[in-house]
Length: 404
Image (cartoon, rainbow, N blue to C red; front, top):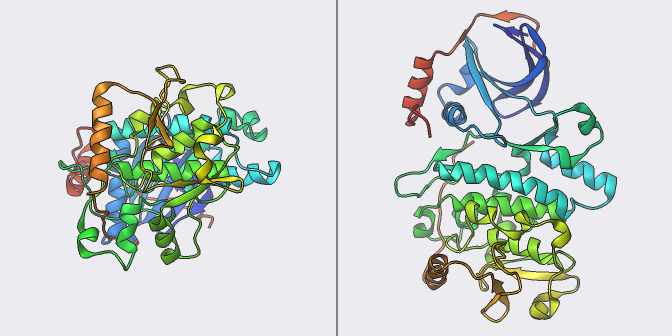
């Protein structure tokens, strides 16, 4: 299919509202792009149009090496086309499946560290600009290789991470709170998931959430990369809600202290205690060489060991096993008998203690879920959306077109 200077070569995948095509531009067949094609008749008067505008508006201003790059948007009488950077490594979820098939086990801590450094850096960038993604999952992270040889060799340590699918993303409100529950339940912040739990009170469903919702979701995908399955593997929605409300997950005792600390900093039920992207960027799991990682001191967690696993409680022991790399690791401060946190500066320590005091008084909350081929070889009359049209789209959506 020819669309102006674009040639849509083959379908890479299909979604609820359209398809994604491998694309080249006239005059340069070597550079590849990915083009999302949407049927205007199917989306213009519904929620899908809101999410399309969302993606265009937000991606225009998020320029980061680990966020998929937006190129342009074109329209015809029947379609919208969003042209973006092409990522030749496919979905991270598929890479994990392939790795397990080849090696018989999930990613190593070294590979997870390689990916998490990039993911955390992208979300630190996003959160500093007051953007919340709201649909973090392995399917929404692509891999990209600089050359085909690294891709053919499946050299994951050469792969670059690219965050995609910003349809549910938004700029946080002045209060810092959002109220619409979006995303994939298996990766959803427990406070948002309670919206879907019939046992939740009306008040719990009406309260808001913050950017820390992304952090919980990042924790779930980190766990999945390390263990090969969800931290809260469930048969259905009710089972999922119950397992998270029970408040614990298991992790093997042969994992390093650093990785368990890193996971525990993200998978905290109370978002006030959950680490931020900025704090995670300073965590020893990301800053140290994996060869320096230490085994967990099992004597300090003997009451939590069940067989070959450690039971981590996301509620009752809501303190963080944080190890920041800016101090002597041996100088650990004991908290609550069996949890450890690295001494940090006085201001952060006061904030941490205040968060702990709020924990018992805080009630969990949340909110609502909205409903959510090879092309013919012919040309369509097409026009590239002008700057004014894109600005109007931004305005209609309630976003500033001046940057975020």
